[in-house]
Image (tube, rainbow, N blue to C red):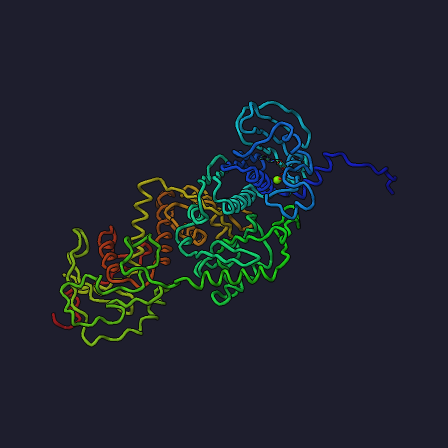
Amino acid sequence: MQEARPIRMLDDHVVNKIAAGEVVDRPASVVKELLENALDAGATQVDIEVVAGGRDAIVITDNGSGMGRDDALLSLERHATSKIRDVQDIEQVATMGFRGEALAAISAVSRFTLRTCRRGDEAGTEINIAGGKILEVREAGPIPGTQMAARNLFFNTPARRKFLRSDATETAHIRQVFLLYALACPEVGLRLVIDRREVHNLPPEDSLEARLKTLYPPHLVADLRPVLLETPLVTVRGYAGLPATARGDRSEQYFFINRRPAAAPVLHYGLSEGYREALPRDRHPVVFLFLELPPETVDVNVHPTKREVRFRHPGAVRDAMIEAVRSAIGASPVSAPLSGCAPATLPLRLAPPPAVVHMESLPMGDAPSSVAPPPGGAFPAPAVAPASVEAAAGASPRVEIPAVGPPAEPARRLPEGGPWKWYRLLGQVGGQYAVLETEDGLVLMDPRAAHERVLYEHFMGQASRQKIASQGLLMPQTFSLAPRDALAVRKHIGLLRESGFGIAEFGGDAFVVDAVPAVFGELPAAAFLADVVQALDQGGGRRTAAELGRDLIAQVAARHAVRRTEAALGREALDRLIGDLAACEMPYTCPHGRPTLLHFGMGELARKFGRS
Ligand code: ADP
Ligand code: MG
């Protein structure tokens, strides 16, 4: 039995250390608190720098109001806040913070430096604290604004430190926080530097849309529809993704309540209801939704760090959500065709292909105007871009056989050095294979294989002109791989990094990728990794590692790009594809060795017809 000990009041800094656990559980929550403070201080520019997942350092610099010396000292005390005065204020709070706990908590579990100066003051203040103990207070330069630096986070709480995950994971959480506030405050310039590498430098914008454009790939932004609904209780604004944006998880759903990032089950419920007719149950749209409602009807004080809120009128909020998203996506021209012209450049432009090819826009030569074009033109294109060639084939039997054959096409010249001097495009078989007449007989072309070859040479050209450029991902992606693939990734991780992948182990068979080779452009990065690695594992050891990597990446990029663009091609696009293929170094096979062209020369045709 232990001998009874006297009860005593805990020291302030012990209390702070205990309380700190509630407010700061990981580096990302430090970033959140300091960033909120900067925004509350009216900053128009905030710079965030983190080192080693925030473990070694988190430094946040703002150009906000700054503090005088007395306020600076007071701000570090627990329950010291300038944002509310009494209980009634909590109901009306319009700032991000109001508990007055963050600075006390963060400075209790780190080596903390606060530097701050009000505009117009002759000198600023610098305070150094370690583990909650003030070490030094002195004058600092008169730079208006505030800089807060938390170093050696949890140095005095080893248990908490042990619970931190890998740098990559902690960094991923920090990026998530950054993203949330970047969306919440488009008018604030935000910079994020991770391990001395600038990951984002977002200029101040005058709209959410502008900010979305700097954060998300154009094809995603193009699939967003504006949301605006005003009811007496709540206003819902923002953007809702068309069904095409849907994903298997809810990770791209952002809700803000009175500008604070927030979550509430009723919001998710309203959202799924709003999309019920548009999406299967297990698919989730991308949304960025901002709800504004009177502060006294929202309880944000549920938990210090949890984003979860409660509504006084949840039913009304839910109904507003449903109506808001329904009218946003319902009114959208989901399958409205672009104008009749083919995409300006064949590959890489991932915009949907023209749904209908207008005859007038085709190079018809001297076609007699009395010939009625078959529905959809000589090259029937389904109204909605099909997901695959198979789908395209499935959609074409609707085409009626024209009573009069399509007019003869003019022959087209091919550049020097191509497989033939000229060709005449006769039509397509099964909605897929192009049929060509050339000076040397009949040629069938598989547009998909051809496209892959063209893209492959394009990507290879890019890769050889420059050292493989890497492009940071906004949201690092983690994925678990099958054990075999994971093994292969580990084996080739050096080569992957040389080739532009920012990749790190994530525990178990999981990996986190925060950058991809730039040739991948806007393609979904996650899909590639397994493919690249499988290809790497099969690719022999004949060529140098760098060559091999470059080649494989180009192959995989080409394959995925084709998957994204493939759809029935109009005549113009086919003509362009034929020209591009003829200009390729190796036009006869796709990068994986399948044929792009089948050739039946005049000699062969004669033999087959028993003419020779
Ligand atoms: P809260 O944000 O809940 O008020 P904090 O502990 O985060 O509590 O901050 C305490 C106080 O310090 C704030 O109320 C604010 O007056 C002041 N403060 C904190 N950060 C800044 C900053 N970046 N610029 C100006 N004042 C700040
Ligand atoms: Mg705060």
